[in-house]
Image (cartoon, rainbow, N blue to C red; front, side, top):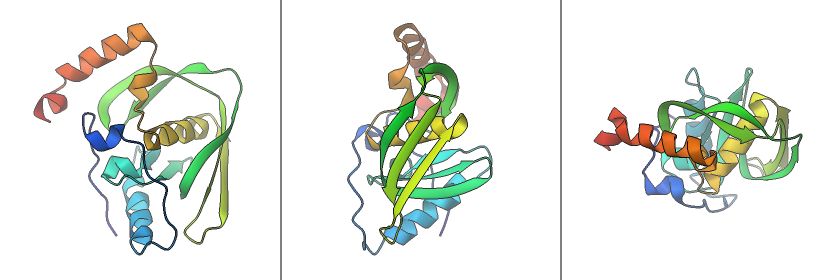
Amino acid sequence: MSERAIRLFGDPVLRSKSDPVRLGDPGLAGLVDDLIDTVTVPGRAGVAACQIGVGLRAFSYNVDGEIGYVLNPEIVELGGEAELVDEGCLSVPGFFFPRRRHPFARVVGVDLNGDRLELSGEGLMAQALQHETDHLDGTLYVMGLEPETKRDAMRQIRESDWFKLS
């Protein structure tokens, strides 16, 4: 279908918990196509449906040459001690802040046919699975920053050109 515009910090859809996908919905295949087209832009590791203005539990990923999607994802396992990793977000453009993430994550969901999908990984994949699932729960990564880092991040975001224009 097409690459969709990314919603920016401050858009209410990013702070709302996404509704479960209903399999068989006639627009669902188009949403998946748009998520895939949007995540394949260079430099993108994941795109949640809410980031393109759709409040449904779906996201696409593009990590280490592996591109795909998952519907109704839920984190079923996190492994290892959470550690600080630099993280950014398409909805908070131009910023990277240290955020605690587990080095391993496993997500379970379904594909368009209702078949079970299981995604897991370490490093960037683990980070993407946690980040995108957070989006579907209405949580932007900056909300999970350590308090002092969060204060500084929010100040920088409020002073950014794109935030002033929105």
